[in-house]
View 1 (tube, rainbow, N blue to C red):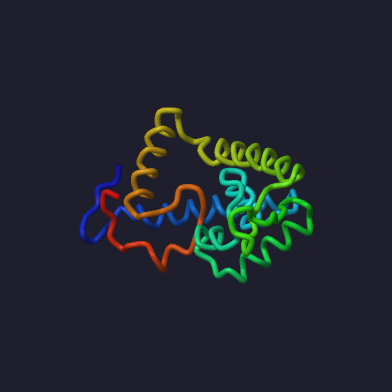
View 2 (spheres, helix red, strand yellow; view 1 turned 60 degrees about the vertical axis):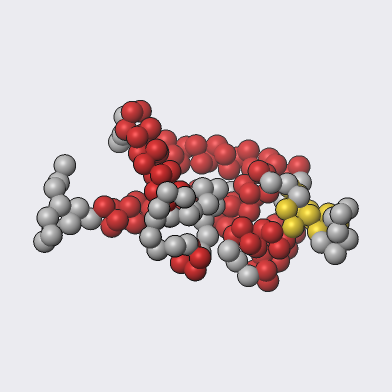
Length: 164
């Protein structure tokens, strides 16, 4: 391994950024093949894990303005993947649920994600993959990241990690 000196840093953050960009780009290519954007895929995945979220709760989880989420849900609803159901506890709100077609797409996305991960991690051994996963999870937790989705982390995540 390279040892860092004051004049020659390891560039670990740069390499993480570079790999993140490659992973994001390749995943976007894969989701595009089934007619989805990465944002569409993220919402479908989140609704699969948390059926019944309100649009406001979804916007909060995504760190997005509600109007952006409305247009995203409108698009998914027009394609028959998501449905809005009036909340039984608060008639002012709608709960978001995947349709049968949305659940089929979710299953397809799971397969895409698994294949994506296998290809991205192919240069590593099983032991290295486990070690990397543990280290990345620790970094994500230390920086307050939501392990279920991407969001605008620049606004509300502390700049200094910790043991959160």
